[in-house]
Image 1: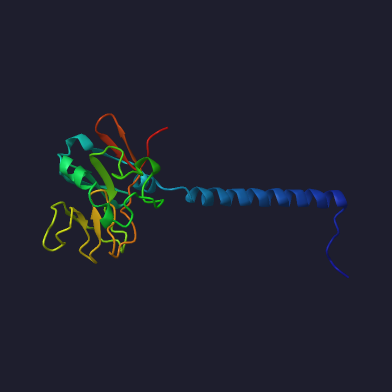
Image 2: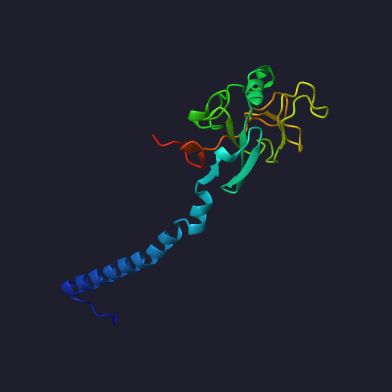
Length: 198
């Protein structure tokens, strides 16, 4: 015979209701800190925040590097000669019209791969194995070749990109350099990390 006392129905219901309420409160109390811990920290939010560069202070032919999300991003002010050269070597390029999605935002899907024709904004990481290419704007150099129109050359495995970040044929890199989201406010304030507002 069991020594456990059998509670009458109303007392049992009250006890079960109290136990359920206490258990629910305990679950809520432990869930709130857990869910809050999944929110990004201030440091993480700052890491993904847009960065600003002064496009107006960059001289024609000059390349500047800024950091966005831990990656180097080039801002190049192209000269008139550089822009003209971009229209003369499509036959050397793997994807001259930037037709592959994901390499640039739709508003930069053009032959110059830019919002403003003279300013190129490119993630400075080779699409082959992540090396940082060298800026080689001089056309026809002996070490790269007589047909070289100027651009970016990756010394790790020989990938070549023109001054719009478009990849050449027959090199290890599979795609063009990435164009990050960006927009301008005013004449010269360049915001990297967020596209134009609609």
